[in-house]
Length: 477
Image 1 (tube, helix red, strand yellow):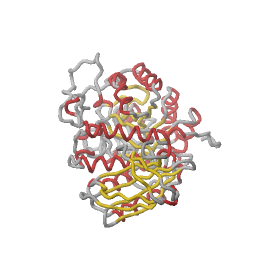
Image 2 (image 1 turned 180 degrees about the vertical axis):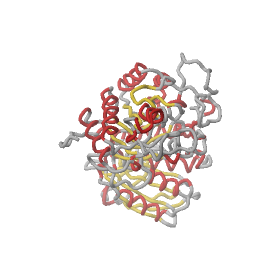
Image 3 (image 1 turned 60 degrees about the vertical axis):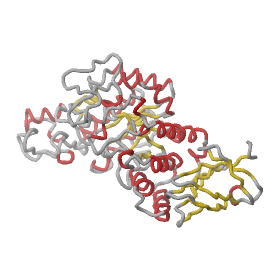
Image 4 (image 1 turned 120 degrees about the vertical axis):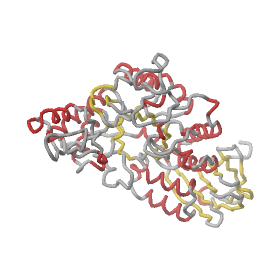
């Protein structure tokens, strides 16, 4: 392992808006056959084994859709050779799965994405592999004579991978043998994998199941390998809880913020916590990491491992929109799971991995338009991407709260009303706008509100609504 710390600059992530794609389920390409062995109809009920035929060229052909939505960072679930549609059981880490296309197809996607200022993350599944991974296959064939026995956690020989299995599998599944990354040869192999794809020009890695790898040595070596090739590569850790021991320089730039997701679902979708509890949990979350790391966390509300957001919300659009509003104003990288922006439904895996709906008549246009609006607002207000975060006021009885994002040059006020009845509240903004009368504009609606002596009165703050307010010089500005 190298002793020096390579340079690292991920300042670009402050402007990132991430879109997660499940490659088999996003889009077939215009030249791809629509049927064949193992290919099921696009709108079939998802199963653990069926392929729907999504391809890399299909993603490339849909980049205009992503550009229209406004996203600028794509995270691709695994694309390497594997036997399952999720491809977390990889058996060749140096090869694009032929069902998805070729290396040339991938390079074409990467080139067109970069030409349109869209960055691309790959999914690195280095905690476990598939049974067809050549070292594991060698162990099955040769038993104790194999030079790869130390790459895995074998309990008994011969190795049986298709019955009662005698090795450690991911979540006790024989489909995915767990890799021994404490073994130097195993580490070297996966560092070579990371170097190969980083040299292809990708913009970073989402690393799977990082907390399940024993010790931190491999992740530190991986950071060194990737950052030496590309100092601006973004290293994202998949974590489900607090990750203070993982999210630090020399290991990971940020993590999947499932803690954020749970807070948002509890308050906006389920309504299971009070405003006071919500504000308290948000404040605690912001103390969990240094500010630089907080700003690089991926704030997701759905993923291939969770129920669809629309399903969790039982189709309640007003609750959904308020949750999305908070996601897009909060410090960190807002993330959209493919199809959530159009109201796709889905229960837990595998039902949450349905084929993307491209029939626009079946889209929830209100939800998609609102998502696009939030993307545009975040892009237009640098303070939402770079500013500090502060709690200004909390109205427990009215289920309202007011937050501030602030830089040296500008302020943005975020107002949340999470209740079913209109309320009247007065907000004191004098410490940030002074006492000279001025106006505030809501970027969601364009409405303007008079600010008298630093105070704003909202006589009819609508139910399940929010505002993103900035000062303007006059009512007509």
